[in-house]
Amino acid sequence: MLKCAIVPVTAYQQNCSVLVCEATGRAAVVDPGGDVDRIKAAIEQLGGTLDRIFLTHGHMDHCAAADDMRQEFGVPIIGPQKEDSFWIDKLPDWCQMSGFPHAEAFVPDQWLEDGDTVTLGEQTFQVRHCPGHTPGHVIFFHEGMRLAMVGDVLFQGSIGRTDFPMGDYDTLIASIQQKLWPLGDDITFIPGHGPTSTFGQERKTNPFVADTRFG
Image (cartoon, rainbow, N blue to C red; front, side, top):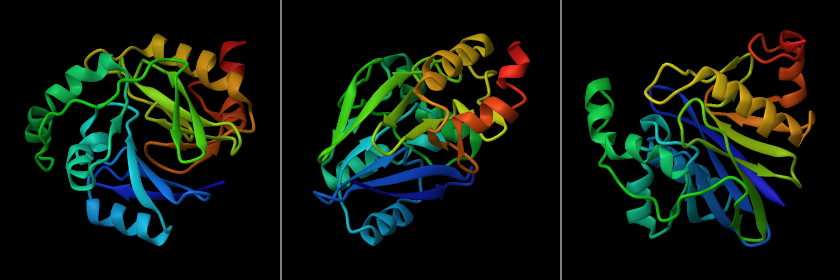
């Protein structure tokens, strides 16, 4: 159905996901923040041909290499939701301020909205708009694989920061409870940083969003 590899990239050790549709060999890269050679090696190792780029949000460690890969491979950038355009527009400034490798601003080929679907070969992913960490953050969910790529919404034992411009703690908690939990406790998720987990495990043990915290 799907082959998947996680490639930690940049000094921020951001989890770039490489997905390959087994039936077609078409590959997608989710959140290519940098280290393009390592991403390309993972695509080759999985036997895929890059077909599209998916973005969960506009922070530099998730998207700084997206336009370079789009130009090199002639593939579309899909996502995030358009409220993150201000992050991508100021990408050169954020990179300079943070000592991050330079990246130019760009415009995705397609902005996404809650309830959209995106495809990769014969595979379909559901899109959920999950603001809070950033206003235009989206997640990608593959129902057949019971797999979600959630960017910086949720981590094992933690949640995304909300002290960035346009971040909001209450909005993030609502996104997790209303957009992620209904997908099912059995869902394995790939976060933007750190190890994978399941929604059920986080509902039991995550000090920020455990069910017991909310009575």
